[in-house]
Amino acid sequence: MSTSAVPSDWQIANLEACVDILDSQRVPVNNKERQVRIQNKAPDELHPYYGATGEVGKIDGYLFDEELVALGEDGVPFLDPRKPKAYILSGKTWVNNHAHVLKAIEGLTTNRFLLHYLNQFDYQEYVNGGTRLKLTQANMRRMPIPVPPLAEQKVIADKLDTLLAQVENTKARLERIPPILKRFRQSVLAAAVSGRLTEEWRNGAEFEVESDALGKFVSIDIGHAFKSKEFSARGISLLRGQNIEPGALRWSETKYFPEAKLSEFHHLFINSGDIVLAMDRPIISSGLKIARAKPSDLPCVLVQRVARFKDFNDLLADYLYVLLQDISFSNYIQPNQTGSDIPHISGKQILAYPVKIPSIEEQAEIVRQVDQLFAHADRIEQQVNNALARVNNLTQSILAKAFRGELTEQWRKDNPELISGENSAEALLERIKAERAAMKPVKKSRQKRTTA
Image (cartoon, rainbow, N blue to C red; front, side, top):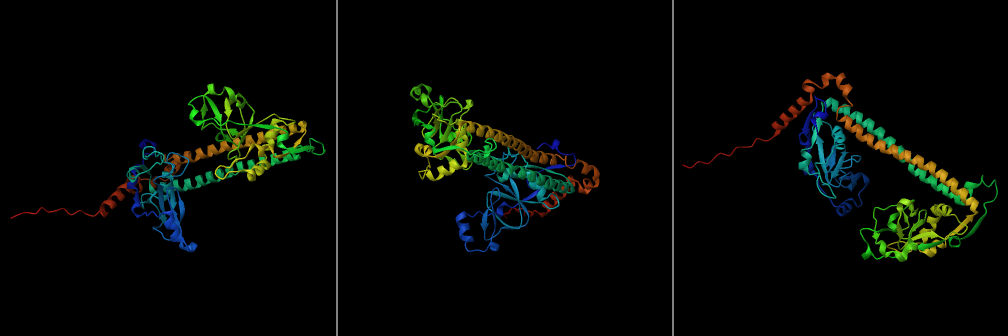
């Protein structure tokens, strides 16, 4: 941390000079042992059991009974500035060895000031490890921390508590909007396939449909089982079930096949606008794995257990996409899946789906209205996502300003007596340093034995 980034009357110290480190009092207990210990215990006999990022369970005892700061030791998103690395412990708690336990030195700093600082600190040069980063106690001890006068620290902590609570409230309100938009889209689809959406367009006429199995109106291609031993580093992208997400194709796990060996499979090449459905694990938490190929997805070729719809008969491809996105199709697939390890749906079951198909003219009108309403929802969602990004950045911006002294610049001008003399940060550090030195036991010097 650069000393030039803080006000001149602040001090910079190593973390170990500002806290008591209570790591030696931590006791890890595995889950099996904890389950035995909490069995048949009343809720008021149990206490929170904490790990790297927060509470991970309960236990029938406690190690600490005061306000402290826990800072993750490993398994923590140290390099993600938007995610917390430290949290407050209060009351009777038990902490395992995945979190450092710190206590702000009274009269020098406060736990709340410490908490906010640790959650915005750049840990890049202080953690090590590969996939699971670790903050060793040695590296934690040498972390630099700004030390404003104590009164100013309390003002900073109060301001941060207020401002960050406002940010979190705003974020929570914004995060409630996407689920509302998801329900809105589902209601639009339900209204579309039931005819309610086009009631006004029909001028009160009946919703005339032809009821039959989907296979009467469309057929499907199912991809080829290309041999994995022939996969190549380059070539044509293989469109697998893993590449299909609700509404879009994703190519983060792309497999390729040599183009020279695909001459007999040109009928399985995907065209822009093709509707594809994953037959293995077709339903995931975010919805049905169905999408339409875009020009940017091409070229790609269909793989085993992926279905591509074709040969449309009195059915618009755009309307089929609306029809299959409706929750009714997912509800049909769910009980018709087979396979315990990898649930899948067969082509025969897909084509047996009972559908109600209106006239081509009404299909086109339904698609037009759905596109219009979805576009409106998409615009709102994009605005929400942009706002969320700004809110996430705002948290770090507020924290950065706080620890550069910008939030308390006017306060320092208005309260010079609280940041000078015996109240200065320099005086605080010297006093604590002297008190700690006085508390250290004096080592007795060994006297040399003499021989007569």
